[in-house]
Amino acid sequence: MIRKSFLYMVVVLMATCAGLTANATIPAGYYNSLDGKSGQALKNAIHDLTLQHTVLSYNSLWTYFRDTDSYPDNPNRVWDMYSDKFYFFTSSYGMNREHSLPKSWWAPSGQNSNTDLYPSYTDIMHLYPADADANAAKYYWPLGEVSRVNFNNGVTKVGTPKTGQGGGASEVFEPDDRYKGDFARTYFYMACTYQHYRWRHTFMLNNDDWKSLNEWSVDLLCRWARNDAVSDKEVDRNEAVQRCQNNRNPFIDIPELFEYIWGNRQGQVFYLSEAGTSSDTTTYHGEPELIAPTQGTVLDFGEVALGKSIDYTIYIKGRGLTNPLTLTIYRYDAEMFSIPVSSVSRTAANSANGYPLKVTYTPTTVGEHTSRLVILDGGLTGSVGVELHARCLPVPSLTKLEALDATGITGSNYTANWRTADEEVDYYIITRSVYNKNSGDVRVEEFTTDDDSTTSFTFTDRQADETHTYYVQSYRLGYMSEPSNVITIDATGLTGIQADKPLQVIPMEGGILVKCSEPVGSANVYDMAGRLVRNIDNLTDDTIIDLPRGFYLLTTSTSRQAWKVAVK
Image 1 (cartoon, helix red, strand yellow):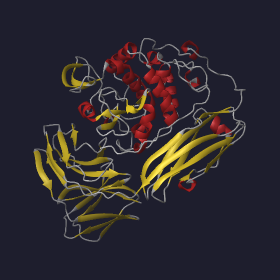
Image 2 (cartoon, rainbow, N blue to C red):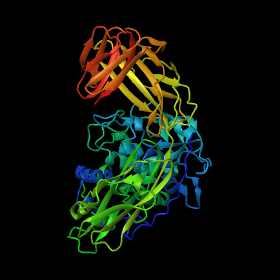
Image 3 (cartoon, helix red, strand yellow):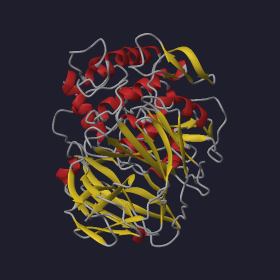
């Protein structure tokens, strides 16, 4: 269920050079780093350019959707590329914040794959408002063309892929013809921007080739991009996204760009002059200017619970600045917002990537809060203002969930289930522990749902000789509920709900303290690589286990649940 407040943003773009796509207002010099490059070097240049953007908060997405995904003649209506249903921003129940490239596909090295701290998790370039039923049918399937339909609402089709498509997936998601180019250019952007990611699911992407996209998906996406040209909708959305997160999709601005990496111009050198503009390769001699952020940009932190804080990183990029820039936050609720520096050198601001400025919202009272970040000096005429908006809510009261028996159990698959929360939540977190009986290895992973309307999560990677357990928590504004009861699936099938053991693991400086009302047998402590670091023959109440700083898993001989703990 979606219950969000919306702020309509009116943002004025600075005057820029003629765009490469009709009606686009691309900042002067924005694509200079691509000029004269080919192949992998060109793709790397796109990655370096698009990765450096303002990272939005998940709670603020619906605010920005009103600017990026509304109809031009009706700003209150949601433009949904997954259905033709009538949804409105004033009452958008039944819609999801959809990752067009499923978030379950990525797993950056050394990090959890489903945290909202990743730029990709809230990169609005690939996030769209979507009908919940279509989103559920789409699941985590790759793009493709359907040969046998299992779901069809007139816009979204899901079903068996045509021969040669799917990358091993049993089903594919096929958008309407009018949106196929939109999704293709979105995937081109993601394949470049997040090329450094380690992909968990490789239906369309791979971890071995610099092109990132598999051969079958290259054929599909290139064909879709050629057959469905860039639309006014994409151009307008690209402008709005720049106002939100200060980067652009180059495959919309330069429609032929994909041909140089994956298409029929592979190996050729890309020149901006051939794309309809000229690069500025000489020293800039014009008036000092600020390329980003633009005047009137809005940073909306969304909803934050009292006692929590949230950060935005906004990139300050200048051109021809002659002096340091001065930064200040003033007006209204200025004390709720903070920045770590009061000035930025002209060298840092004039650099290709700009200066990453962290803006922090730390509310001390409940309510709506606004302020303004002002950027001046540097040789600029006048100043540039960035509006800051946020809303602080009381600490949520989250009740313990009930995990339900797994269903659909096969040799490799099962679906985790739970009862919905009674209160408002943002999404659910499923913590799964995997025990390999042969090697003794223990693996703990977290997965999140897209929103609060989902009460199941399907796993497709179950292996022989593994015992799986899961428990569920609800998440709201930085707070999590108490873990639910634990469900166990052993190597032969479901064993049912496992009773919670009377055990509490308390992190402390230099180790952990274990509280239990009865002996719980022997215990093992593993590091996050699965290595055994401590063994306790008989774990009893008030046992202190000394451990260096880090993250650990505690298991006992009387429970298959693993307790995760961070030692500071």
